[in-house]
Image (cartoon, rainbow, N blue to C red; front, top):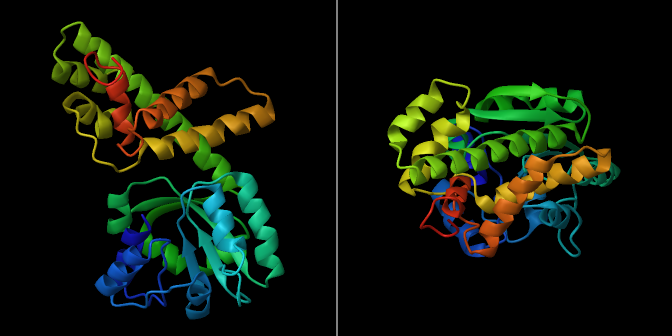
Length: 283
């Protein structure tokens, strides 16, 4: 996601001060592609930039880039604006807002409800939270990478909303996999079944994006099963905090964790069908 966002920003005339990845070889190769500086330390990114965009994998990675001993983004961060795009726990955004503000900087959430293709095309849907004046100040940049944005409130709210978006999406994905697998076991024509689903209450965005892939076992990764497990886990944790029963979310989380256990975590989320179709990994 981050690479395609950077490509889009360069296309739109923005200057990228420096890029950083935990894998130095990736940093170097991508820097050559974009003809920008390859930072060897996080602090170099902050020094070279007014606005810093972060896209990380999980809570631990987010804490590491801001709080890591010896090198982090908050070194010399006074006056900087951080836009954090990853799906992490709401509590992490709240923790980091405090230390970012103490460093004389600002941070907002811009959770992405989109795919890597949309990142390249500049058609992301962004769920925004944090200080509204800071959000407004970076509107030109946000507008260059997204076609729609929705501000949902103070820090932490975007992460909550994104967790629910992905919780529902993941439930839909697992349910569709079971429906198609059962249809296949019954000997139904899955092309016809998907067409009927599309004209009835079984229709969904997931049917459009993942249905044929489940049928044809084409699981090129746009949103990995490992990320699906992470995000469903965040939603289940929020349910525990609020004492809300979410049996479907828990069952879906178990399926995606099983994919990881079976070595399938880097398949697209559509790969959950490998657990349901007879004759595949778990069927």
